[in-house]
Image (cartoon, rainbow, N blue to C red; front, side, top):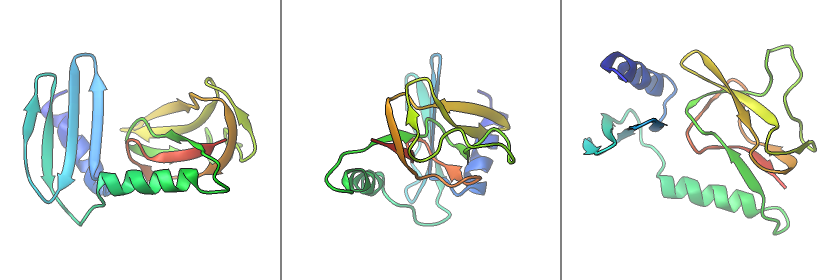
Length: 155
């Protein structure tokens, strides 16, 4: 990854008000974070870049706690979450006028395509990677999703 691509990622983060971006590829790992403490650290396999904060951001622990709370809500039943494997824009269907990939109540398995995430003009099909029934669609169509953000809840 060159400097120009990193600049594009930073611009994408600013445009979509994202606080964290993580990407791993063969022998390469990069984490971009926006926060109050501008600290730059490096690791043998990649690097972490800190950007100045545009606005206060929620902590990861708080986000994880709220995700666990919502997942266990609803009659004490523990739901699995299908989370975003990347930063990008969430789309529930292959085209604006097409039927969505999945609907609430639909059964899915590991190979079922549940959505598309657009990242840097590339459409990435996302599979369920679990068996179950879709009980909630958390992400909003056309809105940004962050790495690890819940998009669907499955029973």
